[in-house]
Length: 472
Image (cartoon, rainbow, N blue to C red):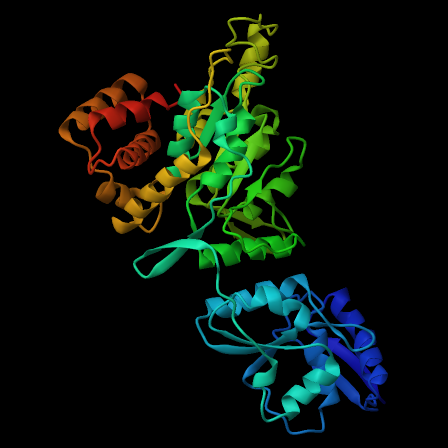
């Protein structure tokens, strides 16, 4: 008897596609074949989701009695009831995965998807509006009329080893708005130049959040792959994709659940901040379990989520920025206001950040109090010029990662100390009880400071400044 079934662990969205496909075929004057039709989504043990299977299934049914070579084409798109092709959030992710395969492929997509996909290189993209156009496309001998031209970036870039890194000098929030806080601004510059994790501690209103929000705009430039990854994360979040070379800034509220931040069945906030900034305002007010769960992402740049039926792994190569008060009332470090907290309150507040967590923080900055003598001193554009220069220095030295993300072998190779710096480091290990991780953190921060000062090796001055930012 005639039937139409889809097998292979398809989600409800895929099962519902049967009605969309039937309607689209009938609306466009195609007869739905009175046969037993079985669509097999292989491999059958992997669950499939999304409506992007609509268009290829409908095309196969409509052309089932014709000899057509589909071998060289991928096809994605959701069907409207009238046969129109629609974009879905999964299409960009799927096409990006094909680009990662390093093979030249041909793709037929809805016209709605063409604009955001045309930026991906090494992909032959063809776009159609509806089911009739798709059928005509495969019947035609000349397919070039439907081809979408690849779009080139119009942003500024620097070229290092034949690879472009894009940037734009537009600063929605400028460091000229920050008056005073010279130590904090210096630490922020070191943080973005080397991609070092940082925590600002200070009284309420001292400028912790102001500085944190401005750091996004002076971060190092982005490669094409990084921009595409950013757009992929935007697509997952159903955001309008932006190809501007500005890194993502993710700032979850401290009342957010652990699953929403770390991730579960869906990607969490730390996964969405990959390649960008993860900002925790009021850091000690986050659940202690969330703060402790950040250890692996901060150290290994990945987070592994294990559930009963699945295991997932997300990249987490973000710049972590934390902001916190010195005590619950915020006035512990103030010389003008009295602290209302008891010693027990302060101890409980501080204990929410464990030593293993703090050991993974490269820079810990104590903010100064606001004064009427405070004045603006440096603009975001000036700071970005330094970031750009230091970024080029690190890559031309042969590094594949910025200083803050170097592994042990790379530290030995690129973070060499002169004799004076070695003597200071040996004394610091004894006096400050530095852990092995802490020693490496100091070396990496000192390497960035030396790069900012245009020094080939790490000298004693760079080591001393790096040690001044350690939490003791």
